[in-house]
Image (tube, rainbow, N blue to C red; front, side):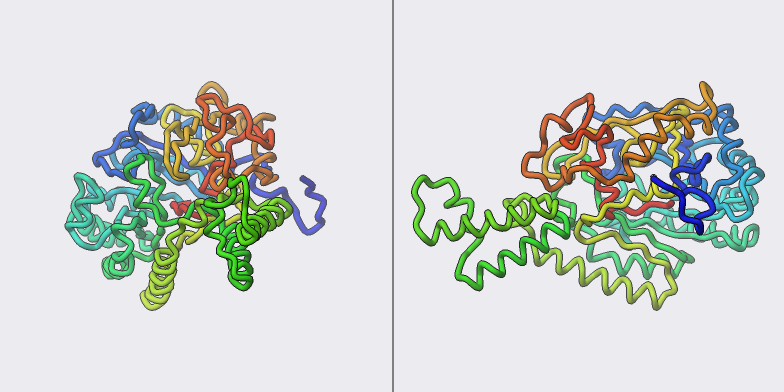
Length: 439
């Protein structure tokens, strides 16, 4: 990658000598048991613990040029007894334009706690709200009550006397069972002081929750190509849906051969353009559901504009033009034990079912704070090479591949994919625009 452009006075964030954003997991403990959380995944191997004061202090030298510090991982940050102290320490180190925030279920956020966080220097707090009805909320957030979140909103509004610029927002995890509640929840949150909302699709960690996800098993490029060829077939009186019934026949009629020829033409174009697709999955897409999601998203955008709510929606269909916001923004992720990771996808080891098959994801660490300082780890040859390789965006689309799950990725010890890339980005959905988080 060249930085020779005379207008570019410094390299992009991924290749500066310091991270631009830090995601710091204060604790992996949580006071809820939400079904959509990685902590509830069967066979989970996530170790429980909380960040020590020594580890957090070791991060401070890297904060002098930070754009953002996000103090959460897979746990509830308010369970850490020293969160206020950590915020104060970070605030003293960070530049004036840098912001500090975290996401929370809000159960521990009373007025005294909110004022203490504001006085320490917190800038943004995002509350998890997946429904505006108490019954639906209770079902989705096991152990949670909507009334507790309402109290948290009231506490944060009061805390604005300490810090007038404190931004309050919500994160809404989108599922089939709460899709119809999105607009009502946005209205509910805005009425209680929310200024922003992050809407994220569900990443199913359990096979039983696979049916709750709303996005199809393909990219928008594959769907566009498929629809175009299907329309071409209809114009010629060819039903592409017959393909799997006739493709493997020893002897085909003229009409059956026309079906096969049409699909072979589609496959040839897909290969030429580098479009991965699985015809069976494309034929099974629930078009009515996609139309419904699109209609609700349009309604949500209009409502957010009326309410003055800054709304971030995910893609309806996974995008083919990938972009890793974490690497592009120069992010580093620090686990509670000090290990340094590149992104949300590779922060922990877990299993998920996003593609219709069980995917094994292994955490990728480049060192541990305490054994080395963070800037040494960030500038190490290994971590820089990883970021360079990710931003080449030369990975397969495992999500939409007919051969997945293959032996390259379905392993406890990932080495490389079919493109010989040593990072497992081919099976990552974050870079396809499906998930939103505080960043």
